Structures are given as structure tokens and as C-alpha cells.
Length: 128
Image 1 (tube, rainbow, N blue to C red):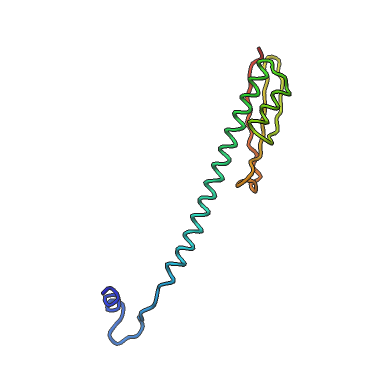
Image 2: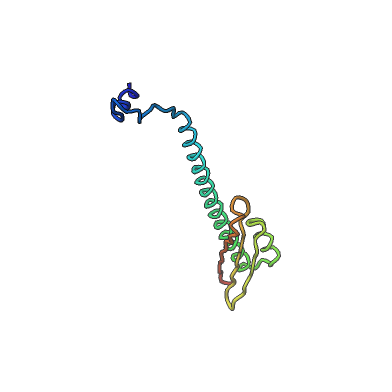
């Protein structure tokens, strides 16, 4: 019914300009483009989640490290604890007159390794 109506609307009685075409492959092409876009969007969302997780990890490692040093733990124990919390992270400890600051830097691996992103955090605690 719709094909007859479309044919009547877009063609004149004496013209062969509007012919009926088979459009069965159009849906397949549109689905391929849409699924590529969806896969790109999912990849971008996963990348953001990995970076946010890495940020929370280094924040927690820096906070824990500065508190441990402020309470009198040895640097070796602190480095081991930070390595447990944030594997493959670089750790720097800076002593002030009455405080200690712990810096933790991490390059996330996996989905975002091609971005060459470094996530860092620091925490300062007063010495007891």
C-alpha cells in the first residue's frame, strides 16, 4: 500500500523518473556505521573509568603513605604499602620541618596505555 502511494506521490503518469528500488542493504550499512560509533563511545567511557580509578588509587596510596610516615613507620614499609595499593607507581617522599609530603605518580595501563597519561597525587601530614 505504501509503495503504491509513494509511487503516486513522486511520479507523474507519463514519467519513468521514479522507479521502485530495492533498499534491503541500507539497513545493514546503517547498522555497521552505528555499531562502530557505539564501540568508539564505549571505548572512550572505559578509558575515562580507568583514569578515574587510577586517580583514586594514587590518592589513597599517597594519603596512606603520608600518614604512615607521620606515625613513625620506616620508608621501606611505606614503599611496600604504596606498591601494594598502586603497583608500578613512582613514589617520592619529601620531609619538611614539621611535615612530610608523599607524591605518587602512576601511568595507567590497559585500555589507556596509548594515551601516555600520568596520574599523580600528593598528601601532606604533620609529623608526630
